[in-house]
Length: 238
Image (tube, rainbow, N blue to C red; front, side):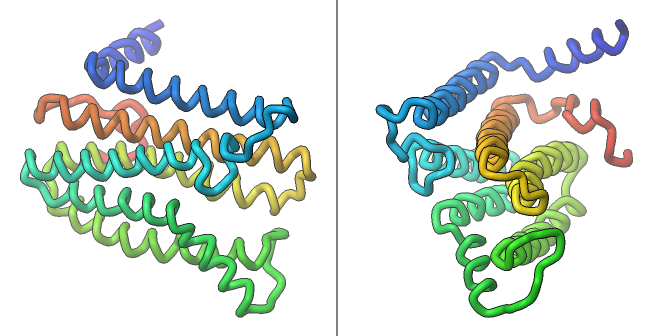
């Protein structure tokens, strides 16, 4: 019972009306795209690939682009009002996510890798999967180094917000990388690929909405707010 009360109090501390309404709108839009994707699969007469979560430049992906852009803009705004470079560093990372999605950077590197290397990848992965992992690892090193530098120089509030963002980005990587690679590593079959592909894309959309909500919440909360996701989960050292 005590844990339940603590959880309710914790959730109330994040209940800024404008941000809560914004999150509800984002989740409703996500749900709409999930339904359209499933209807597109189950009803052949409705078939329109632009409603699919898996199609490049489809409606759901364009919606994702908008969310990435809003996240980057909000972080730049927060950097300005709080006079902190650290939020700008995070904004650059999310702007890269936008560019990567729009220009399929890691997929292009994956295909380049497959065309120029010849070996048997481990765990049943494909050569282009290895190239995509390498591209993601390089990006993580580059942007991670920038953010770590900002984290070291940042104040306590920035560090807490960064810890929350790290948790959310790790959730994003779970769906975008772990689930994606598992499809080929475990040979789940055609039906399994469809299910796991939906889980991957839907998970990415939901987490992106939560990140956008969190960044918007940060932009409207008081600067001295002292409640953070990482304080409840407690995986970071104090």
